[in-house]
Amino acid sequence: MNIIRYFLVWLLSFAFTSLIDVIWHLGIFKRAYSEGIKPLARMSGDKMAFNPFAGILSQVLVVTCIVFLVLYKVQKVNYQEAMLIGAIAGILAITVYGVTNYALFKDWSLKLTVLEVIWGPMLGGFSGAFVVWMKSLLI
Image (tube, rainbow, N blue to C red; front, side, top):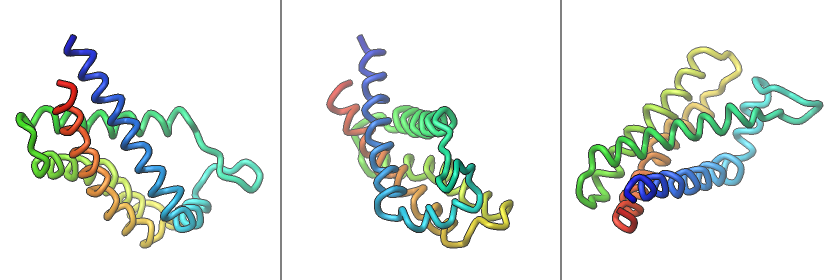
């Protein structure tokens, strides 16, 4: 059934996008994000307290937007177009978030803003290519 295959594309895209997002935030730039977000974060003792519901919901929304826009726009397997659509979705979801935080929060740093400006289109582009790849394999 097609709906199951589309859900599988979404589920695999969610796993892929979440994995590379974790690598970016908790691996490559862990120190920058920890130092930059800590002054703004909810704290439990000396550690940042993560709200799992809000965190997972935000990731679900980002992935759903990327998957929907890529599948809606890219009819044939076209990685360049998928990466472009994904990058635009990443700009709208991630980059706008970073720039808005910089505009609103006195302790949101320019460093975090630059990281989010770079990461938004990268995350979206990688995810867009992944979505098209999964579509070519499953649908």
